[in-house]
Image (cartoon, rainbow, N blue to C red):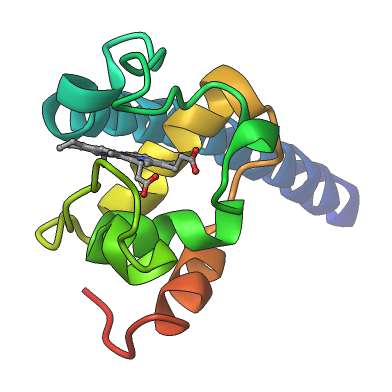
Length: 139
Ligand code: HEC
């Protein structure tokens, strides 16, 4: 009988692991889907639907290494606008998108990351840490 019990425990943990892995995959896919929706709604009018930007007015978002902003500054850039990050001496400013929550910022950043930058997924607590460097509050 003991043998049967440990066998079912084993089967059960395999099931739990499969469930967790599967759930994890689904979660990231949904995150990127939400990130895409946010991008289309709140970013694409300036940076373009394909992230190629618009001439010298709006920078492309495809090549992280060409940015004047480091990845850790992007959450604050989105929340507070470009003036708060670089002093606002550029010809064109990026407006503050204050209504986007920490989670939405994380989703749109990871959407761009998955498309172009190919870094490991940036975790929400990392995004929140970066945000506390320009503001104390969390949404
Ligand atoms: C109204 C137009 C506008 C919208 C909307 C907008 N941006 Fe921007 N964005 C800009 C401009 C202009 C700059 C360049 C600012 C500067 O150089 O000072 C910029 C810069 C950036 C940069 C830094 C690029 C670099 O080369 O350093 C990133 C990243 C970025 N935007 C991401 C986003 C994301 C993500 C969204 C949507 C959540 C968004 N932007 C929405 C206009 C916009």
